[in-house]
Length: 136
Image (tube, rainbow, N blue to C red; front, side):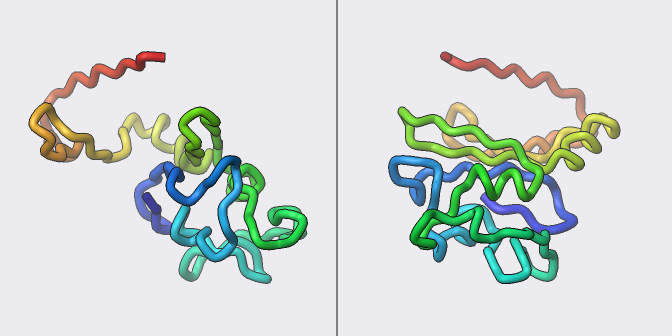
């Protein structure tokens, strides 16, 4: 899942592109999180986040990008589940803080009991109770 500059803050769940670690092939970074590593830094469309040492984001041979280093450069939280081989990169700190200050939850979609996707915005203007739980 990618986000767009100025758009709603979204998180990225990177699983099919990460194999046995927390890095992704350099050429697949855009597919994984929507950002590209360029000489100017990390770029998404017209927006670039300067990175002083782009080599610090790369593996020793330069073919893989460390998602933890990228998340730090983009000021995003990141977590890795080695059992499921999944890396999740969260929304930027400023976006999360703004959402808390505005008391507005970001839109998201989840499948209902029949498998149909339901978005939070589908209930705009109605009171909602969101119950979340985890088995772990």
